[in-house]
Length: 552
Image (cartoon, rainbow, N blue to C red; front, top):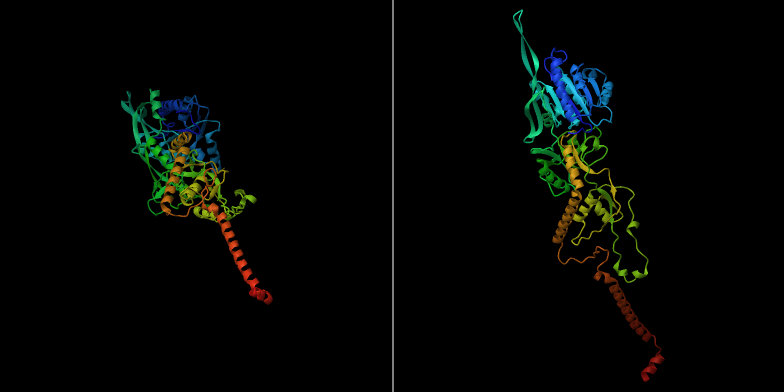
Protein backbone atom coordinates (compact mmCIF):
# COMPACT_ATOMS: atom_id res chain seq x y z
CA UNK A 1 0.00 0.00 0.00
CA UNK A 2 1.49 3.31 -1.10
CA UNK A 3 1.09 6.61 0.77
CA UNK A 4 -2.25 8.13 -0.19
CA UNK A 5 -3.86 11.54 0.00
CA UNK A 6 -5.78 12.35 3.21
CA UNK A 7 -4.92 8.90 4.56
CA UNK A 8 -4.63 8.70 8.35
CA UNK A 9 -3.25 5.79 10.33
CA UNK A 10 -4.62 5.44 13.85
CA UNK A 11 -2.78 3.49 16.55
CA UNK A 12 -4.54 2.80 19.85
CA UNK A 13 -2.43 1.73 22.77
CA UNK A 14 -5.25 0.67 25.13
CA UNK A 15 -3.50 -0.58 28.23
CA UNK A 16 -5.30 -2.13 31.19
CA UNK A 17 -4.44 -1.62 34.86
CA UNK A 18 -3.39 2.00 34.60
CA UNK A 19 -1.34 3.96 32.11
CA UNK A 20 1.86 2.71 30.61
CA UNK A 21 3.75 5.65 32.01
CA UNK A 22 2.60 5.06 35.59
CA UNK A 23 3.35 1.34 35.76
CA UNK A 24 6.96 0.42 36.60
CA UNK A 25 8.53 -1.88 34.08
CA UNK A 26 5.91 -1.37 31.40
CA UNK A 27 7.14 2.03 30.42
CA UNK A 28 10.56 0.62 29.68
CA UNK A 29 9.93 -2.93 28.45
CA UNK A 30 6.33 -3.05 27.21
CA UNK A 31 6.53 0.50 25.86
CA UNK A 32 9.62 -0.36 23.84
CA UNK A 33 7.96 -3.49 22.42
CA UNK A 34 4.85 -1.54 21.39
CA UNK A 35 7.02 1.17 19.83
CA UNK A 36 8.86 -1.47 17.77
CA UNK A 37 5.58 -2.87 16.42
CA UNK A 38 4.24 0.57 15.55
CA UNK A 39 7.54 1.54 13.95
CA UNK A 40 7.46 -1.56 11.75
CA UNK A 41 3.93 -0.77 10.59
CA UNK A 42 4.83 2.84 9.80
CA UNK A 43 7.97 1.82 7.93
CA UNK A 44 6.09 -0.67 5.77
CA UNK A 45 2.92 1.25 4.93
CA UNK A 46 3.40 4.95 5.69
CA UNK A 47 7.00 5.96 5.19
CA UNK A 48 7.18 9.71 4.64
CA UNK A 49 3.84 10.50 6.27
CA UNK A 50 3.27 13.20 8.84
CA UNK A 51 2.73 11.83 12.35
CA UNK A 52 0.05 13.15 14.71
CA UNK A 53 0.59 11.63 18.16
CA UNK A 54 -2.38 11.87 20.50
CA UNK A 55 -2.58 10.68 24.12
CA UNK A 56 -5.01 11.18 26.97
CA UNK A 57 -2.18 12.56 29.13
CA UNK A 58 1.58 12.90 28.86
CA UNK A 59 2.83 9.60 27.35
CA UNK A 60 6.34 8.15 27.37
CA UNK A 61 5.10 5.51 24.93
CA UNK A 62 4.43 8.12 22.26
CA UNK A 63 7.94 9.49 22.79
CA UNK A 64 9.35 6.03 22.08
CA UNK A 65 7.16 5.62 18.99
CA UNK A 66 8.28 9.03 17.79
CA UNK A 67 11.92 7.93 18.09
CA UNK A 68 11.18 4.74 16.12
CA UNK A 69 9.53 6.70 13.29
CA UNK A 70 12.66 8.13 11.71
CA UNK A 71 11.11 8.22 8.21
CA UNK A 72 8.22 10.51 9.14
CA UNK A 73 7.89 14.03 7.75
CA UNK A 74 7.49 15.67 11.14
CA UNK A 75 5.17 15.05 14.06
CA UNK A 76 2.57 16.80 16.23
CA UNK A 77 1.79 15.76 19.83
CA UNK A 78 -1.71 16.36 21.27
CA UNK A 79 -3.11 15.52 24.73
CA UNK A 80 -6.80 14.58 24.38
CA UNK A 81 -7.75 15.42 27.97
CA UNK A 82 -6.33 18.93 27.65
CA UNK A 83 -8.06 19.35 24.29
CA UNK A 84 -11.54 18.73 25.69
CA UNK A 85 -10.86 21.03 28.65
CA UNK A 86 -10.70 23.97 26.23
CA UNK A 87 -13.56 26.18 25.09
CA UNK A 88 -15.42 25.04 21.97
CA UNK A 89 -13.85 27.63 19.61
CA UNK A 90 -10.40 26.60 20.82
CA UNK A 91 -11.24 22.92 20.33
CA UNK A 92 -12.40 23.58 16.79
CA UNK A 93 -9.23 25.51 16.02
CA UNK A 94 -6.98 22.77 17.40
CA UNK A 95 -8.85 20.01 15.56
CA UNK A 96 -8.66 22.02 12.36
CA UNK A 97 -4.89 22.21 12.67
CA UNK A 98 -4.56 18.60 13.74
CA UNK A 99 -4.14 17.35 10.18
CA UNK A 100 -1.21 19.56 9.32
CA UNK A 101 -0.55 21.36 6.05
CA UNK A 102 -2.11 20.53 2.71
CA UNK A 103 1.31 19.71 1.24
CA UNK A 104 1.45 16.47 3.20
CA UNK A 105 0.39 13.57 0.98
CA UNK A 106 -0.52 11.31 3.89
CA UNK A 107 -0.85 11.48 7.64
CA UNK A 108 -0.52 9.02 10.49
CA UNK A 109 -2.45 9.52 13.72
CA UNK A 110 -1.10 7.54 16.67
CA UNK A 111 -3.49 7.50 19.60
CA UNK A 112 -2.48 6.20 23.02
CA UNK A 113 -5.18 5.75 25.63
CA UNK A 114 -5.71 3.89 28.88
CA UNK A 115 -8.39 1.31 29.56
CA UNK A 116 -10.13 3.77 31.88
CA UNK A 117 -10.31 6.50 29.26
CA UNK A 118 -11.39 4.59 26.15
CA UNK A 119 -14.65 6.59 25.95
CA UNK A 120 -12.62 9.80 25.75
CA UNK A 121 -10.60 8.33 22.88
CA UNK A 122 -13.69 7.33 20.90
CA UNK A 123 -15.16 10.75 21.59
CA UNK A 124 -12.08 12.24 20.00
CA UNK A 125 -12.49 9.98 16.94
CA UNK A 126 -16.13 11.02 16.62
CA UNK A 127 -15.24 14.71 16.88
CA UNK A 128 -12.49 14.25 14.30
CA UNK A 129 -15.08 12.50 12.03
CA UNK A 130 -13.08 9.33 11.55
CA UNK A 131 -16.16 7.68 10.03
CA UNK A 132 -15.73 9.93 6.98
CA UNK A 133 -12.32 8.39 6.22
CA UNK A 134 -12.94 4.71 5.36
CA UNK A 135 -9.50 4.29 3.79
CA UNK A 136 -7.83 5.05 7.13
CA UNK A 137 -6.25 1.88 8.54
CA UNK A 138 -6.72 1.43 12.28
CA UNK A 139 -4.44 -0.53 14.60
CA UNK A 140 -5.57 -1.07 18.18
CA UNK A 141 -3.16 -2.16 20.90
CA UNK A 142 -4.88 -3.45 24.00
CA UNK A 143 -5.94 -6.47 25.99
CA UNK A 144 -8.12 -9.35 24.80
CA UNK A 145 -11.12 -8.33 26.90
CA UNK A 146 -11.50 -5.04 25.00
CA UNK A 147 -11.25 -6.51 21.51
CA UNK A 148 -14.93 -7.08 20.70
CA UNK A 149 -16.15 -3.70 21.94
CA UNK A 150 -13.39 -1.84 20.10
CA UNK A 151 -13.78 -3.61 16.75
CA UNK A 152 -17.55 -3.12 16.73
CA UNK A 153 -17.64 0.48 17.93
CA UNK A 154 -19.98 2.64 15.77
CA UNK A 155 -17.31 5.24 15.05
CA UNK A 156 -15.33 2.52 13.22
CA UNK A 157 -18.29 1.26 11.19
CA UNK A 158 -16.86 2.51 7.88
CA UNK A 159 -13.20 1.69 8.47
CA UNK A 160 -11.98 -0.84 5.93
CA UNK A 161 -8.80 -2.04 7.64
CA UNK A 162 -8.70 -2.65 11.41
CA UNK A 163 -6.08 -4.66 13.30
CA UNK A 164 -6.19 -5.45 17.00
CA UNK A 165 -3.03 -6.47 18.80
CA UNK A 166 -4.12 -8.20 22.02
CA UNK A 167 -0.96 -7.92 24.13
CA UNK A 168 -0.41 -10.78 26.56
CA UNK A 169 0.18 -10.25 30.28
CA UNK A 170 2.34 -12.79 32.11
CA UNK A 171 3.11 -13.22 35.81
CA UNK A 172 6.78 -13.31 36.84
CA UNK A 173 7.85 -14.46 40.30
CA UNK A 174 10.93 -13.42 42.24
CA UNK A 175 12.23 -14.97 45.50
CA UNK A 176 13.52 -12.83 48.35
CA UNK A 177 16.18 -15.13 49.79
CA UNK A 178 16.63 -13.12 53.00
CA UNK A 179 12.92 -12.90 53.90
CA UNK A 180 12.02 -16.18 52.18
CA UNK A 181 9.10 -14.38 50.44
CA UNK A 182 8.09 -15.02 46.84
CA UNK A 183 6.96 -11.86 45.02
CA UNK A 184 5.04 -11.85 41.70
CA UNK A 185 4.11 -9.12 39.27
CA UNK A 186 2.45 -8.78 35.86
CA UNK A 187 4.51 -7.79 32.84
CA UNK A 188 3.81 -7.55 29.13
CA UNK A 189 4.77 -10.68 27.22
CA UNK A 190 6.65 -10.58 23.94
CA UNK A 191 3.70 -12.37 22.33
CA UNK A 192 0.50 -10.81 20.98
CA UNK A 193 -2.67 -12.23 19.41
CA UNK A 194 -3.54 -10.37 16.20
CA UNK A 195 -7.15 -9.91 15.12
CA UNK A 196 -8.30 -8.43 11.83
CA UNK A 197 -11.82 -7.20 11.20
CA UNK A 198 -13.30 -7.82 7.76
CA UNK A 199 -16.45 -6.00 6.68
CA UNK A 200 -17.82 -8.68 4.31
CA UNK A 201 -16.12 -11.98 5.18
CA UNK A 202 -19.14 -13.57 6.90
CA UNK A 203 -21.31 -14.09 3.77
CA UNK A 204 -21.36 -10.35 3.26
CA UNK A 205 -21.41 -9.53 6.98
CA UNK A 206 -18.78 -8.31 9.44
CA UNK A 207 -16.35 -10.90 10.79
CA UNK A 208 -13.29 -10.95 13.08
CA UNK A 209 -10.41 -13.19 12.00
CA UNK A 210 -7.65 -14.49 14.30
CA UNK A 211 -4.28 -14.22 12.56
CA UNK A 212 -1.07 -16.07 13.48
CA UNK A 213 0.43 -15.02 16.80
CA UNK A 214 2.76 -12.03 16.64
CA UNK A 215 6.20 -11.92 18.23
CA UNK A 216 6.92 -8.28 19.07
CA UNK A 217 10.64 -9.01 19.38
CA UNK A 218 11.19 -10.83 16.10
CA UNK A 219 8.13 -9.86 14.03
CA UNK A 220 8.94 -10.27 10.31
CA UNK A 221 8.31 -7.91 7.43
CA UNK A 222 6.48 -10.53 5.39
CA UNK A 223 3.92 -10.75 8.18
CA UNK A 224 3.58 -6.97 8.19
CA UNK A 225 2.94 -6.92 4.45
CA UNK A 226 0.09 -9.40 4.87
CA UNK A 227 -1.62 -7.49 7.68
CA UNK A 228 -3.13 -4.77 5.46
CA UNK A 229 -4.21 -6.00 2.05
CA UNK A 230 -4.52 -3.73 -0.96
CA UNK A 231 -6.28 -6.33 -3.14
CA UNK A 232 -9.61 -5.39 -4.77
CA UNK A 233 -12.56 -5.96 -2.47
CA UNK A 234 -14.77 -9.03 -2.78
CA UNK A 235 -18.12 -8.18 -1.20
CA UNK A 236 -18.84 -11.87 -0.51
CA UNK A 237 -22.51 -11.63 -1.54
CA UNK A 238 -23.27 -8.47 0.45
CA UNK A 239 -26.70 -7.03 -0.45
CA UNK A 240 -26.58 -3.31 -1.15
CA UNK A 241 -29.64 -1.16 -0.46
CA UNK A 242 -30.18 1.17 -3.43
CA UNK A 243 -32.64 3.99 -4.00
CA UNK A 244 -33.42 5.24 -7.50
CA UNK A 245 -35.92 6.99 -9.74
CA UNK A 246 -36.61 6.43 -13.46
CA UNK A 247 -34.53 8.62 -15.74
CA UNK A 248 -34.57 6.92 -19.14
CA UNK A 249 -32.28 5.96 -20.83
CA UNK A 250 -29.92 6.10 -17.83
CA UNK A 251 -32.26 4.26 -15.47
CA UNK A 252 -35.59 2.51 -16.01
CA UNK A 253 -37.73 0.49 -13.60
CA UNK A 254 -41.02 -1.32 -13.18
CA UNK A 255 -42.90 -0.76 -9.95
CA UNK A 256 -43.73 -3.93 -8.02
CA UNK A 257 -46.64 -2.19 -6.26
CA UNK A 258 -48.26 1.20 -5.84
CA UNK A 259 -47.04 1.58 -2.25
CA UNK A 260 -44.59 4.44 -1.52
CA UNK A 261 -41.03 3.18 -1.33
CA UNK A 262 -41.86 0.06 -3.30
CA UNK A 263 -39.26 -2.31 -4.69
CA UNK A 264 -38.30 -1.63 -8.31
CA UNK A 265 -37.60 -4.24 -10.95
CA UNK A 266 -34.82 -2.76 -13.12
CA UNK A 267 -35.37 -2.55 -16.88
CA UNK A 268 -32.80 -2.25 -19.63
CA UNK A 269 -30.81 0.95 -19.08
CA UNK A 270 -27.26 2.17 -18.63
CA UNK A 271 -27.40 1.79 -14.84
CA UNK A 272 -28.75 -1.76 -15.06
CA UNK A 273 -25.97 -2.81 -17.44
CA UNK A 274 -23.36 -1.32 -15.13
CA UNK A 275 -24.89 -3.01 -12.10
CA UNK A 276 -24.94 -6.39 -13.84
CA UNK A 277 -21.29 -6.11 -14.86
CA UNK A 278 -20.22 -4.94 -11.38
CA UNK A 279 -22.21 -7.73 -9.69
CA UNK A 280 -20.29 -10.39 -11.57
CA UNK A 281 -16.97 -8.65 -10.97
CA UNK A 282 -17.26 -7.75 -7.27
CA UNK A 283 -19.63 -10.50 -6.03
CA UNK A 284 -22.58 -8.64 -4.51
CA UNK A 285 -26.37 -8.49 -4.76
CA UNK A 286 -28.71 -5.51 -4.54
CA UNK A 287 -32.26 -4.36 -3.90
CA UNK A 288 -33.58 -1.23 -5.60
CA UNK A 289 -36.34 0.81 -3.98
CA UNK A 290 -38.15 4.03 -4.74
CA UNK A 291 -37.57 6.93 -2.31
CA UNK A 292 -40.46 7.12 0.15
CA UNK A 293 -41.58 10.51 -1.13
CA UNK A 294 -40.68 9.84 -4.78
CA UNK A 295 -38.34 12.84 -5.00
CA UNK A 296 -34.74 13.30 -6.06
CA UNK A 297 -33.92 15.35 -2.99
CA UNK A 298 -34.14 18.97 -1.85
CA UNK A 299 -33.37 20.78 1.39
CA UNK A 300 -36.62 22.14 2.83
CA UNK A 301 -34.62 24.53 5.01
CA UNK A 302 -34.04 22.52 8.18
CA UNK A 303 -31.08 20.52 6.83
CA UNK A 304 -33.05 17.26 6.57
CA UNK A 305 -33.10 16.44 2.89
CA UNK A 306 -35.93 14.68 1.09
CA UNK A 307 -35.94 11.96 -1.55
CA UNK A 308 -32.91 9.93 -2.56
CA UNK A 309 -30.50 12.42 -0.99
CA UNK A 310 -32.38 12.21 2.31
CA UNK A 311 -32.21 8.39 2.29
CA UNK A 312 -28.42 8.61 1.96
CA UNK A 313 -28.13 11.37 4.57
CA UNK A 314 -30.03 9.25 7.10
CA UNK A 315 -28.11 6.10 6.04
CA UNK A 316 -31.31 4.27 5.09
CA UNK A 317 -29.61 3.30 1.82
CA UNK A 318 -26.06 2.52 0.77
CA UNK A 319 -26.13 4.44 -2.49
CA UNK A 320 -28.42 5.74 -5.21
CA UNK A 321 -28.23 5.45 -8.96
CA UNK A 322 -28.16 8.35 -11.41
CA UNK A 323 -28.04 11.67 -9.56
CA UNK A 324 -26.98 15.10 -10.81
CA UNK A 325 -23.83 16.46 -9.17
CA UNK A 326 -24.35 20.00 -7.90
CA UNK A 327 -22.73 22.22 -5.23
CA UNK A 328 -25.45 21.69 -2.61
CA UNK A 329 -25.75 17.92 -2.88
CA UNK A 330 -22.00 17.38 -2.77
CA UNK A 331 -22.04 18.54 0.86
CA UNK A 332 -24.46 15.75 1.81
CA UNK A 333 -23.62 12.96 -0.64
CA UNK A 334 -20.32 11.52 -1.88
CA UNK A 335 -20.34 10.98 -5.65
CA UNK A 336 -18.52 8.64 -7.97
CA UNK A 337 -16.77 10.01 -11.03
CA UNK A 338 -19.40 11.42 -13.44
CA UNK A 339 -20.27 8.91 -16.13
CA UNK A 340 -22.94 10.75 -18.09
CA UNK A 341 -23.41 14.33 -19.19
CA UNK A 342 -26.96 14.88 -20.40
CA UNK A 343 -27.17 17.90 -22.73
CA UNK A 344 -30.12 20.28 -22.50
CA UNK A 345 -31.78 21.14 -25.82
CA UNK A 346 -34.88 22.97 -27.09
CA UNK A 347 -37.75 21.08 -28.72
CA UNK A 348 -39.84 23.19 -31.05
CA UNK A 349 -42.45 22.59 -33.74
CA UNK A 350 -41.19 21.92 -37.25
CA UNK A 351 -42.38 24.35 -39.95
CA UNK A 352 -45.75 23.09 -41.14
CA UNK A 353 -46.47 22.12 -44.75
CA UNK A 354 -47.59 25.10 -46.82
CA UNK A 355 -51.12 24.94 -48.32
CA UNK A 356 -51.03 22.63 -51.35
CA UNK A 357 -53.78 24.46 -53.22
CA UNK A 358 -51.28 27.29 -53.83
CA UNK A 359 -48.57 24.98 -55.14
CA UNK A 360 -49.36 25.94 -58.74
CA UNK A 361 -48.40 29.57 -58.13
CA UNK A 362 -45.77 29.13 -55.36
CA UNK A 363 -42.79 29.31 -57.74
CA UNK A 364 -43.78 32.92 -58.42
CA UNK A 365 -44.00 33.95 -54.75
CA UNK A 366 -41.42 34.79 -52.04
CA UNK A 367 -39.86 32.32 -49.54
CA UNK A 368 -41.70 31.24 -46.38
CA UNK A 369 -40.68 31.39 -42.74
CA UNK A 370 -37.90 29.31 -41.15
CA UNK A 371 -37.69 27.73 -37.66
CA UNK A 372 -35.55 30.66 -36.56
CA UNK A 373 -38.48 32.99 -37.24
CA UNK A 374 -40.81 31.22 -34.80
CA UNK A 375 -41.91 32.92 -31.66
CA UNK A 376 -40.49 31.70 -28.32
CA UNK A 377 -42.23 32.33 -25.06
CA UNK A 378 -40.47 34.81 -22.84
CA UNK A 379 -41.61 33.16 -19.56
CA UNK A 380 -40.82 29.64 -18.40
CA UNK A 381 -43.75 27.39 -17.54
CA UNK A 382 -43.60 24.03 -15.75
CA UNK A 383 -45.80 21.05 -16.56
CA UNK A 384 -45.49 17.26 -17.03
CA UNK A 385 -43.26 16.30 -19.93
CA UNK A 386 -45.96 15.00 -22.29
CA UNK A 387 -48.14 18.03 -21.60
CA UNK A 388 -45.21 20.25 -22.55
CA UNK A 389 -44.90 18.51 -25.92
CA UNK A 390 -48.65 18.86 -26.53
CA UNK A 391 -48.30 22.60 -25.96
CA UNK A 392 -45.49 22.67 -28.51
CA UNK A 393 -47.81 20.99 -31.01
CA UNK A 394 -50.30 23.83 -30.57
CA UNK A 395 -47.63 26.27 -31.69
CA UNK A 396 -45.97 29.38 -30.22
CA UNK A 397 -44.30 27.23 -27.58
CA UNK A 398 -40.92 25.54 -27.08
CA UNK A 399 -39.89 22.91 -24.55
CA UNK A 400 -36.46 22.95 -22.81
CA UNK A 401 -35.45 19.54 -21.49
CA UNK A 402 -32.77 16.85 -21.55
CA UNK A 403 -32.00 15.62 -25.04
CA UNK A 404 -32.20 11.86 -24.53
CA UNK A 405 -35.21 11.95 -22.23
CA UNK A 406 -37.08 14.24 -24.62
CA UNK A 407 -36.15 12.06 -27.59
CA UNK A 408 -37.46 8.98 -25.80
CA UNK A 409 -40.80 10.68 -25.03
CA UNK A 410 -41.12 11.87 -28.61
CA UNK A 411 -40.38 8.38 -29.91
CA UNK A 412 -42.96 6.83 -27.60
CA UNK A 413 -45.84 9.28 -27.97
CA UNK A 414 -45.29 11.64 -30.89
CA UNK A 415 -43.79 9.54 -33.69
CA UNK A 416 -45.82 7.57 -36.26
CA UNK A 417 -45.06 4.15 -37.69
CA UNK A 418 -42.91 5.63 -40.44
CA UNK A 419 -40.66 7.49 -38.03
CA UNK A 420 -42.01 10.97 -38.66
CA UNK A 421 -42.17 13.41 -35.77
CA UNK A 422 -43.39 17.02 -35.88
CA UNK A 423 -40.68 18.23 -33.48
CA UNK A 424 -37.39 19.92 -34.23
CA UNK A 425 -34.41 19.53 -31.85
CA UNK A 426 -32.00 22.44 -31.54
CA UNK A 427 -28.44 21.79 -32.67
CA UNK A 428 -26.98 23.77 -29.78
CA UNK A 429 -26.49 21.62 -26.67
CA UNK A 430 -25.90 22.95 -23.16
CA UNK A 431 -24.25 20.87 -20.41
CA UNK A 432 -25.64 21.35 -16.89
CA UNK A 433 -23.23 21.12 -13.92
CA UNK A 434 -20.48 18.51 -13.88
CA UNK A 435 -22.60 15.58 -14.95
CA UNK A 436 -24.38 12.63 -13.40
CA UNK A 437 -22.95 9.95 -11.14
CA UNK A 438 -23.95 7.55 -8.40
CA UNK A 439 -24.40 9.06 -4.95
CA UNK A 440 -23.17 7.30 -1.80
CA UNK A 441 -23.77 7.92 1.87
CA UNK A 442 -20.91 9.83 3.46
CA UNK A 443 -18.01 7.65 4.56
CA UNK A 444 -19.18 4.59 2.61
CA UNK A 445 -16.19 2.20 2.50
CA UNK A 446 -17.18 0.87 -0.94
CA UNK A 447 -17.51 4.19 -2.81
CA UNK A 448 -13.98 4.21 -4.19
CA UNK A 449 -14.34 0.67 -5.49
CA UNK A 450 -17.51 1.55 -7.40
CA UNK A 451 -15.99 4.81 -8.61
CA UNK A 452 -13.02 2.93 -10.09
CA UNK A 453 -15.28 0.41 -11.81
CA UNK A 454 -17.41 3.21 -13.28
CA UNK A 455 -14.27 4.99 -14.48
CA UNK A 456 -13.16 1.82 -16.29
CA UNK A 457 -16.58 1.58 -17.97
CA UNK A 458 -16.42 5.22 -19.10
CA UNK A 459 -12.84 4.98 -20.37
CA UNK A 460 -13.71 1.81 -22.27
CA UNK A 461 -16.44 3.65 -24.20
CA UNK A 462 -19.20 1.37 -22.92
CA UNK A 463 -21.53 4.17 -21.80
CA UNK A 464 -21.77 5.69 -25.30
CA UNK A 465 -22.13 2.24 -26.85
CA UNK A 466 -24.88 1.21 -24.43
CA UNK A 467 -26.68 4.52 -24.92
CA UNK A 468 -26.85 4.03 -28.68
CA UNK A 469 -28.04 0.43 -28.29
CA UNK A 470 -30.73 1.29 -25.75
CA UNK A 471 -32.11 4.23 -27.73
CA UNK A 472 -32.11 2.24 -30.99
CA UNK A 473 -33.91 -0.66 -29.34
CA UNK A 474 -36.41 1.71 -27.75
CA UNK A 475 -37.15 3.40 -31.07
CA UNK A 476 -37.73 0.05 -32.80
CA UNK A 477 -40.11 -1.13 -30.07
CA UNK A 478 -42.14 2.08 -30.21
CA UNK A 479 -42.25 2.01 -34.00
CA UNK A 480 -43.50 -1.59 -33.99
CA UNK A 481 -46.08 -0.64 -31.40
CA UNK A 482 -47.33 2.22 -33.58
CA UNK A 483 -47.57 -0.05 -36.64
CA UNK A 484 -49.70 -2.54 -34.73
CA UNK A 485 -51.97 0.19 -33.42
CA UNK A 486 -52.63 1.97 -36.71
CA UNK A 487 -55.61 0.81 -38.76
CA UNK A 488 -55.22 -0.38 -42.34
CA UNK A 489 -56.47 2.03 -44.95
CA UNK A 490 -55.54 5.08 -42.95
CA UNK A 491 -55.16 8.19 -45.05
CA UNK A 492 -51.71 8.53 -46.52
CA UNK A 493 -49.62 11.30 -45.04
CA UNK A 494 -46.66 13.26 -46.29
CA UNK A 495 -43.27 12.19 -45.03
CA UNK A 496 -39.92 13.74 -45.57
CA UNK A 497 -36.95 11.56 -46.52
CA UNK A 498 -33.78 11.65 -44.43
CA UNK A 499 -32.07 13.94 -46.95
CA UNK A 500 -34.92 16.48 -46.94
CA UNK A 501 -36.53 15.44 -50.26
CA UNK A 502 -40.31 14.96 -50.36
CA UNK A 503 -42.03 12.03 -52.07
CA UNK A 504 -44.77 13.33 -54.40
CA UNK A 505 -48.31 12.14 -53.76
CA UNK A 506 -51.89 13.03 -54.67
CA UNK A 507 -51.86 15.78 -52.14
CA UNK A 508 -49.24 17.65 -54.15
CA UNK A 509 -51.63 17.78 -57.16
CA UNK A 510 -54.41 19.45 -55.27
CA UNK A 511 -53.64 22.82 -56.87
CA UNK A 512 -54.08 21.47 -60.40
CA UNK A 513 -57.39 19.85 -59.52
CA UNK A 514 -58.58 23.03 -57.85
CA UNK A 515 -57.58 25.01 -60.99
CA UNK A 516 -59.45 22.56 -63.24
CA UNK A 517 -62.51 22.80 -61.03
CA UNK A 518 -62.25 26.55 -61.08
CA UNK A 519 -62.09 26.53 -64.92
CA UNK A 520 -65.08 24.26 -65.14
CA UNK A 521 -66.99 26.51 -62.86
CA UNK A 522 -66.11 29.61 -64.87
CA UNK A 523 -67.13 27.85 -68.12
CA UNK A 524 -70.43 26.77 -66.60
CA UNK A 525 -71.18 30.25 -65.41
CA UNK A 526 -70.29 31.66 -68.84
CA UNK A 527 -72.67 29.22 -70.52
CA UNK A 528 -75.47 30.16 -68.19
CA UNK A 529 -74.79 33.81 -68.84
CA UNK A 530 -74.98 33.38 -72.59
CA UNK A 531 -78.32 31.61 -72.36
CA UNK A 532 -79.72 34.28 -70.13
CA UNK A 533 -78.42 36.95 -72.47
CA UNK A 534 -80.14 35.34 -75.50
CA UNK A 535 -83.49 35.15 -73.73
CA UNK A 536 -83.29 38.74 -72.64
CA UNK A 537 -82.46 40.05 -76.12
CA UNK A 538 -85.43 38.16 -77.59
CA UNK A 539 -87.88 39.80 -75.20
CA UNK A 540 -86.77 43.32 -76.14
CA UNK A 541 -87.18 43.11 -80.00
CA UNK A 542 -89.55 45.77 -81.67
CA UNK A 543 -93.09 44.74 -83.01
CA UNK A 544 -92.23 45.93 -86.55
CA UNK A 545 -89.11 43.77 -86.66
CA UNK A 546 -91.05 40.79 -85.29
CA UNK A 547 -93.85 41.36 -88.01
CA UNK A 548 -91.29 41.52 -90.80
CA UNK A 549 -89.69 38.35 -89.60
CA UNK A 550 -93.04 36.56 -89.49
CA UNK A 551 -94.03 37.74 -93.00
CA UNK A 552 -90.70 36.81 -94.39
